[in-house]
Length: 131
Image 1: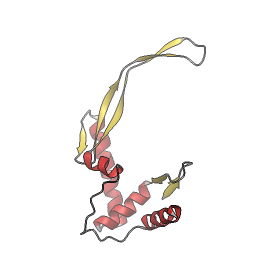
Image 2 (image 1 turned 135 degrees about the horizontal axis):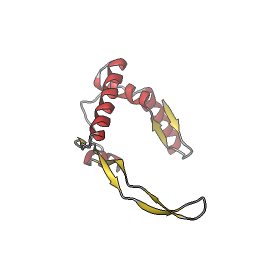
Image 3 (image 1 turned 90 degrees about the vertical axis):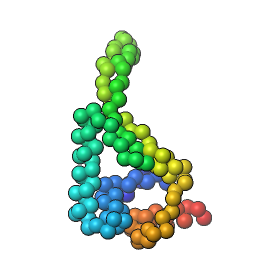
Image 4 (image 1 turned 30 degrees about the horizontal axis):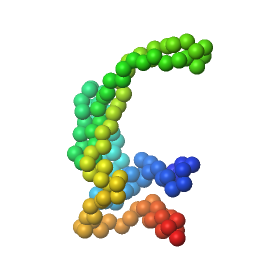
């Protein structure tokens, strides 16, 4: 499933498309791949909820971060209010993902997987936009 945002050329790859792409690359069926994705997200969610740092080398690290309380001006009267301290989930990008975002991807010569319909359409749209 592909969703375009209002930004020209901005593409969002949803869970269904991730499942299709991973299944194609791993040689798994869609049902198995969906279970793997669900298990992965559950393990990350549970680990972070327990306060663990969950690291996938090269990809990134999820963790809980403390956000300090802060004073802000209320939009309902202008009074100063305090937003209490809280925790939020943080994600630090790993080196491999960071390099990929910069356009430095390692092409794997052994990876001769047929592109998914999404990838084929994306390549087609990219080549049309380039002209």
